[in-house]
Length: 220
Image (cartoon, rainbow, N blue to C red; front, side, top):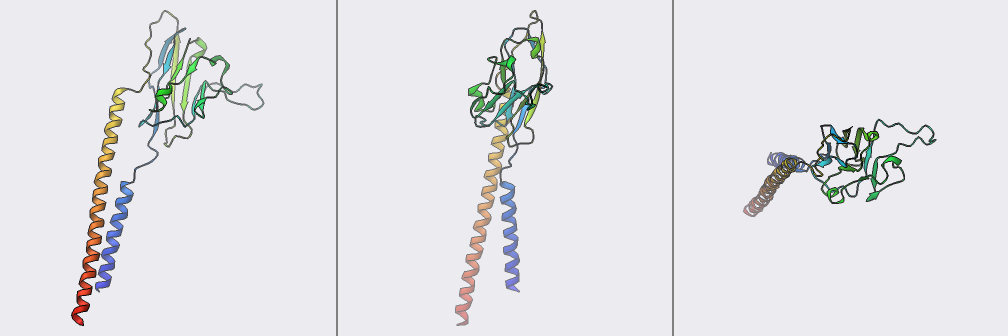
């Protein structure tokens, strides 16, 4: 009877420990690509920035970043039917092999921002042909939302426009920091609870072993 009770107790403690371990394991795949939800308005000839970033912040310098125009169809004369890019960042540098000719020497990412997940694209000397939808995409990002669509509208030069920020909204950065702090606190609480339970298990095993030895001595 005692053996069955002890086995049941140890099984229950083991189950609780495993549940705590799984609940305290940091979730993966929470990263998401976020672009500007509003249309970016530019004047002809302006230099503009299409805002896009990864949240929570993460270093993406080692990942591939693709900027494309999803409404642009492949060249029918191209036998490989390749889709060219507005800007392609791969192997820690811009890949010019598949760049749309009209965007050569007119686009760039922010090198310092990539370490913080900022993948905003700068386009210089905007033309009417630049108008349309742009897609920022990170193929190997650990998350379910790997891309975002930003719309660019180009108006005549007389229109006064504001250049979007190069970095994510400070409010979003603050929210991200709060989330990270909360995750750290939860992890700390889980670790403390886990250590407490393990200590209790070790003490129970030790005490049980001590009582068994004492019973053996009394019988002798």
